[in-house]
Amino acid sequence: MMRTTISLHESVLEKTRKEAKRNHRSLGETISELLTLGLEKKLRRSKNGRKPFVLGTYAMGFPRVSLEDKDALRAVLDSGKI
Image 1 (cartoon, rainbow, N blue to C red):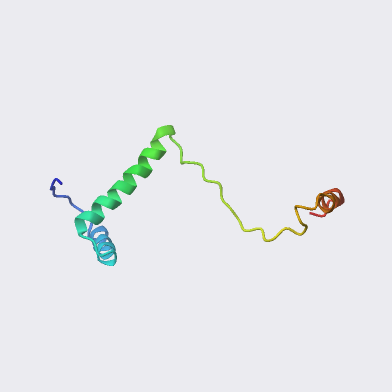
Image 2: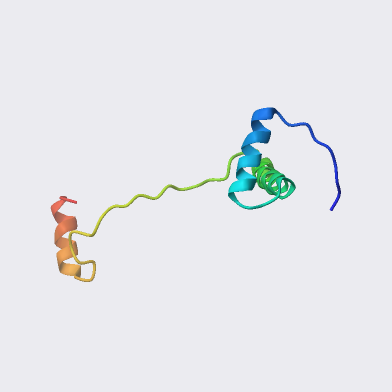
């Protein structure tokens, strides 16, 4: 592993130190991990110039009719009361 000197804003250094301590890792390991994550995210964006598409998911609850019962399902769909 290579060694280098970097200049960080005091607030960034403090947050990074707290993160390292919380995960029981060295400051160097934590900085390397965070830089890797940031670079990977930037490279994913720069491939096509846009953010990757992420489709949101939502809990919709349980079906009101058994999806196995095709007659009941058809009745609900035909009634328009979905």
